[in-house]
Image 1 (spheres, helix red, strand yellow):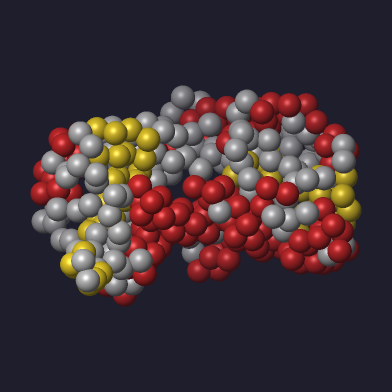
Image 2 (cartoon, one colour):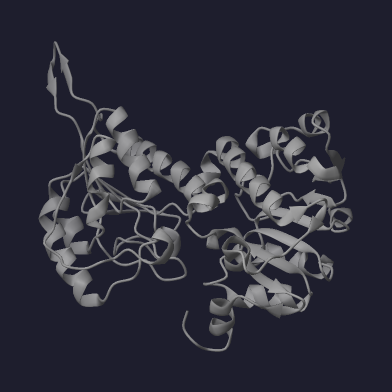
Length: 384
């Protein structure tokens, strides 16, 4: 099977779908690997490194579409404008693997179906034990949680650690992490390593021990609800729940120098957890880093892709954090993709077993149709 790795065309995207060290794993079973010239340059991987590992460098992007399988970080659903140029090049039966955001952009999946290509959306990977090594969202969340703390540390007009000096004692920064998934846990661990005093909150009380295991203090709030959805993802709650949650959080937010929010529900607008009133209660110089900015934001004042200053408080709305650490983000993503591909391809041929949960949940289009039930329902005007 011929596998092509495309250079990303989304503005500012520096990741690449595979790295040189993963090429031998992709080539197992007689697969041939083509890589678009310059595809890995922004992540620190030059063409010669791919060639050294057995890949062929191809200069003309159109030639890469002669492959049986295309690997991307961002497929059309996450690259709506620039991705249109690739759409006419897709061939019937061709496999496309990457991030596709099908629950928010189902029309993009329909366009790919119109080309009779087979699309797999990696963000719908089920969170089950045997799929952990393929879980792209967890890999990228690890990068985002780490990077969020560094952004906060460089923006906050204080240092994170407790310091006792000849000029006096400097108090440690206080960091509050909202949402204790993979990104949240990484943020807690990173902030602790920098010397901050870290607290965290999540609607899932079961994560208390995880917070404590990485050095954080779990903030408990008297809210009765089970917010853990299918597959380990957080599920959306009703507005009354979020109203009560905001009331209880107001005092907690005011006590911290940094607030990092990570609460996102796949395919839905992020819930507002930090209101403008809470921001007004924070000390001037404080920082909010909103990792849910791409989904609208957990902070009422967040503007995706921008930094907003309100009453001396900086609200950061980064939208593509993994791309800020493209080398390691690409390494992790490439490993996830290679493992997923080995699950799908046996003896050099694609073998789709829709009875298998991993295949069934990630398969979006096939034989000219949108076959994922939730995406098909969205296209029909229903609700996922």
